[in-house]
Length: 197
Ligand SMILES: [Fe+2]
Image (cartoon, rainbow, N blue to C red; front, side, top):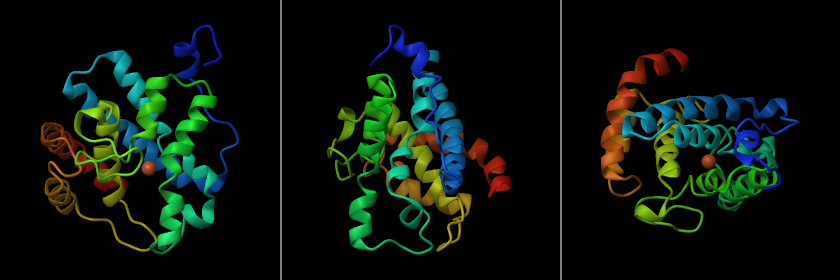
């Protein structure tokens, strides 16, 4: 933190020098922010918490900038060694955002966005209610958007298949109540997402 009014300053903060190859991650992050905001709203969170979650969602993958286009936009599944690097992006992004002056609550959300409800995610290995709620919300939006979007090495899942995948992770990757809510909220957003795919 380096400002007398960090909340106001940092929630409008934007990293500088975003290279063109990062555009796809930015577009994904905007969609995740929109879905996460809806989920947070229907979960009953207030304006300030939603603002924080939207900001964190926009920059949740910011750490991928450090990994470079060869890895982030690889047109093939990653090797084990590449995955080891990829698993570092939440911490790298959280560190960047902390340096940018982001509130610690947002930094913790970014750091934890690949944690799983069962503790088998990557990051600190946090489980259940130890995972910040904002990170749980973003994780659901992140997975849904990722699997319903074409990648160079695989086709997008249909919305129905994506819902089956999310359901199969009930109490494994996701908070069960939050998952149920997400299935309802995302089904309302599905036509728009299909049009964007
Ligand atoms: Fe990520």
